[in-house]
Length: 458
Image (cartoon, rainbow, N blue to C red; front, side):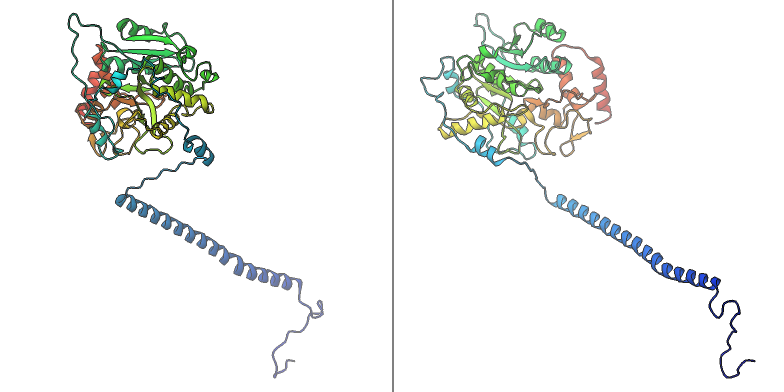
């Protein structure tokens, strides 16, 4: 019987004596587990992925905002950023320290071989602009103000003209003399007055067996010579005579190249041209000055000068003082320009401190127009032509690039010997082909390619 006054109750089973069954316990535990983990794990997993997605979107939006700001800044302003780290001790020791000159400009020490008449003669051209020439085509236009005198054939009975020596150097033990090196020779023979100049190719070994070299020796016997470097003989009468520094070399030919250029100009006078250069026009109007060149248009404070093209007279006191500095300084480290750009800076500062007029410094574009701003430097010689140059100016024959090359004096390729000039690129069309035409070398396939270039309007 059930009570009519209370809730209905189930009678206890005789088997469990009133306790829950095993099935009931398992079901309850399962329900408790599901309730616990379904309410904890699933919502938190969704929350984690949502959080990651939101963070990623925020980062992408921030990145897009930064890019837009940078584009806006560069559209309105023109940033100039260059960061270089120099050890303070090195700067103090090698740059700021200012030692006196060694006396090479004293009248009693000036060599009778130094042509004072030429040094003191009135000059026709100014080769220093007084400005860095970074804007537009200013540097190229300034170079165009320096023009040579008209060439005249010697008249009967005239004495032979004294030839100006041009020097260059090749380490045949590093890389064999080949086609790329021959282009420098061609550029000289095609652009200089061969009745008044002589190219001397210096090397550490005999290059007479090289077919390319033999060809030019036969063609221009009076304007081309080969010589083997003898540093001991070249250094006679200098502060480096008998010095162990004369044997300095490295595997890039930088240290020995910087040494040899000074030695050969001291011994013979003349113009130095790095083998990785292509001459573009007659250098004679520059040679009334003794000079080095500007490294680039940015006026690097500790590296302002370059010696890829330079000119000094025989037994110049400038070179005498340079040898004195080298003899009293630590040896140049391998792979550095410590006997190049840094040496010229030390010398320049000592000269002005002693009230001696320093050597001239040619603007960067005269010999290295690749080293300036994106909007006015020469195009990459080893990249395919883009069709235009410097804010849309033309690269075709007779165009703006062609005109600029006719104003400057040389193109410096910076030892990029492993790279090839692109077929039908600006170097080939505006320089190499013209060298061969000037030298009477027929290359009809080049003429066909130039016609294609003109038709395509590049």
